[in-house]
Image (tube, rainbow, N blue to C red; front, side, top):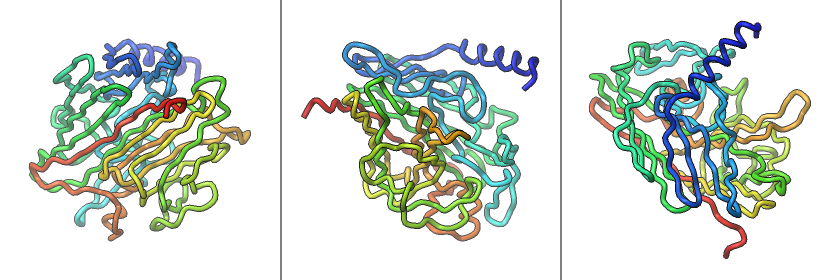
Length: 327
C-alpha cells in the first residue's frame, strides 16, 4: 500500500467510525453497532468483576472482509467461487471483492440500513435491495434484522423476503470475531463445536461432500484451540450449542443457533510464523461455502434456500455468558 493509499484508508476508517452508534446495554452485556454501516457490531463487551471487557475484537475500519467486530452475511455467506453461480440453468456473475477472485460475504455488511425500532434492549432495521442501485445480487430482496438483549443473552436474527417475480436462492450468516483470551488469566480459548462432518477444501472452496471430522477439525471435545490454522466449513451439528470456554477468566460463552443455521465456519488462522491469531471467528451460517453452485450441481443438504416470490424466511442465534464459578 502506498503512502497516499494508506492515508485514504485512514480517512475512510475515521468516516466509518464516525457514523452514529447504537447501543444495547444492561449490567451484564454491552453491544455497540452501526446501522449506517451494515448494522455491523463495533464492540461487544461483558462485565467481569465490575469491569467491562471486550468479548470480540473491536471494529477498526472497513477493510474487507476482516475488520473485526461482527457483521451480517447475506444473501449468501462466505465465498462464491470465481464470483459466478448457476441457478435453474442460468449463470449469474457477481462483482468479485476478494484477492482470490471470489465474491465473499454477500452485500449487506457495508450498506446503510433503515432503523425501524430502537430501544434500550431491542432494535430492528430493514434493507431493501431495490433501493440500492449497485446491489451485488441479481434478485430483488428485502432484509429485516432484529436484536434483543435479555439478561445475559443477546439474540440476533435475520429474515429475507423475495420481492422479485422470480424464484431466488438465498442464504445468510453471522461473523463474530471472538477474542482468544478475555483476560491475562486465560491461556487460550477452548472451542467446542458439536459438528460431525467437515468439507474437504482447496483454497477455501469445498472440493467434495462433507466427511467425518478428524485431527484438527475434530472440535467436539473441550481442549485449547491452539495453532489450529482453521478456515473450514462444518456441518451435521449434533446439538445447536457452540461453546467457547475461557477457563482462566471463569467464563463460558454459549452460541445457540437455530436449526436453519445448519453449517458453521471456523476461522482461526495462523501467521507465516506459525503463531495463532488472537481471535477465532465462529460463523453460524445457513449453507456450505459456494453453496449456490453445489446446489446447481445436484448436491444434497447444501443448506441453500430457494424463496418463491413473496416468501419470507430466516432465523438467528443468541450469545450468552455463563459464570463458571456458579453452579
